[in-house]
Length: 209
Image 1 (cartoon, one colour):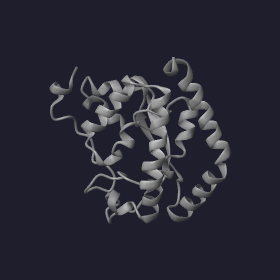
Image 2: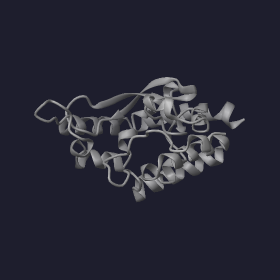
Image 3: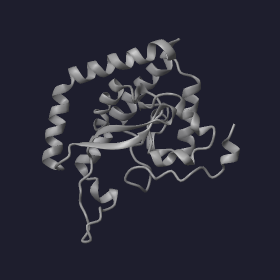
């Protein structure tokens, strides 16, 4: 009942409240990004959502446009400065996703929306993460965020889709505040500026169900 009739109305209510109550914060962050990183303030990218539907995700920009002598963008580690890292540590870059939630592309809680190019790489069990709307935060985000392996993240995503409830969502939201805003853990994977790219599971047959 919660999944079918309650979750979406709560998403709309929460996203509307966030946009209204924190409109001043959105404006302040936008001004700071414009001053430190330039235009555009909003980062847009295609992501895969519920039923593998493609949508455009909105995030605050965190990287500069620094390029080498040939005009190619420098590696993420060189374009992600102190300011951008702070935005990511505090999850401030995720705030514009409230618009995605309001539009129905996303939910407050659910598997994180990933790159479209990953779609052909999922095994059958991993594909189950797309049976629900992707979330602003999720089970994997409070169990290690970007510091755990892709396989572990996907398993947690699937586990969430199989056990959705109001209580679980509330627990994940509470844990998100603790992990992202207080402990600030798992923002990056060891040895990388962000998270390594997913190149497919090593043992797809084993993970299929």
